[in-house]
Image (cartoon, rainbow, N blue to C red; front, side, top):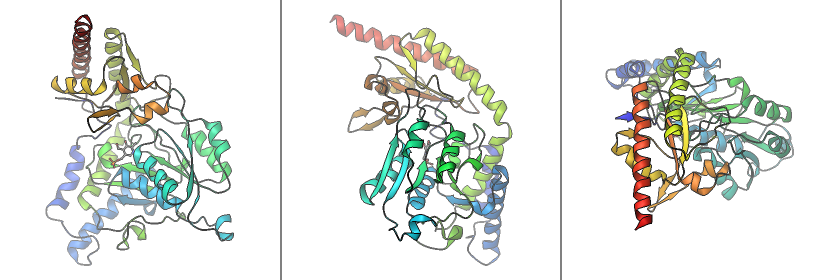
Length: 394
Ligand SMILES: Cc1ncc(COP(=O)(O)O)c(C=O)c1O
């Protein structure tokens, strides 16, 4: 099997597995228990928090453990939007419901649907920023959209489907100048590009995207900011996220974060070469291939292409039969393929969005796998086109 779907999830690294095992076996206590077993588990959670904080140059209490990327993004968007800001709105005695949010049409559904929920059900107004043909947000539109009642701006650092990286430094500067809170979904960018949390007020992460386990993630929330919990229960995580901590997964996540950060730059250079090699092979052999987000800064590991005239679902199934795991941004709904909202937001024609496939590379991707994948794409496209022209003749 050739696994080229690292943006969907990554394999677990040995360091994470090693860090998890004691807490899956002998040290199984509940971190909230006061006895020795509980204290062991608490020590593991504290150590993971300290290590993550050190790695990210933030304070330990600025890290809120969650169960993954979706929960972190939901907590940020819902929890920050619903929180009355300490300033003008509170003084004016305005309701905590309603207010203004800014986001981008190409966000992951974890942000998109949370903001839409606030818009549809809680009286918020959302300004959806457009993205260019290459997937970059319009900074002038952002500056013009900010209002005195803007409670939150949420812009992802890197897109999961295209790998397109947003100009976060400029976004941050605009938000700071206007006093707006900024959340960024960093689920895909962490471990691949530099993570600079000084640019944002909140940021979301998921362990299974950086060689850690599924079921763990965290939200960075700048010191001094309040957030409304989105779940109700115990007083865990400083009353910001209730529920017994997933101790093994948290220990594994911290170990994976350190491991993946260690050789980040060298690994990105390696993946850039493999990415370029894959695109060269495909573009030389498939003249109708187009790269999506080609002119934007992108994550080194992500290649999103449209093979015009080839339906992405058909291509993915054919690739799977050849042993290649890739993916598309489309969702299958009652038998029909829905084109990727990200590519449509970029203004690509529906046919191009419907023929898109994403290859995402990672630490175990080899040059041989890239060659085999290039050959497989060529073979499949030739076969599909021969079949098409046979039908056309018939
Ligand atoms: C950019 C981005 N945000 C959020 C998520 C949601 O993360 P999770 O699957 O851990 O809930 C994903 C997962 O694909 C993602 O790629």
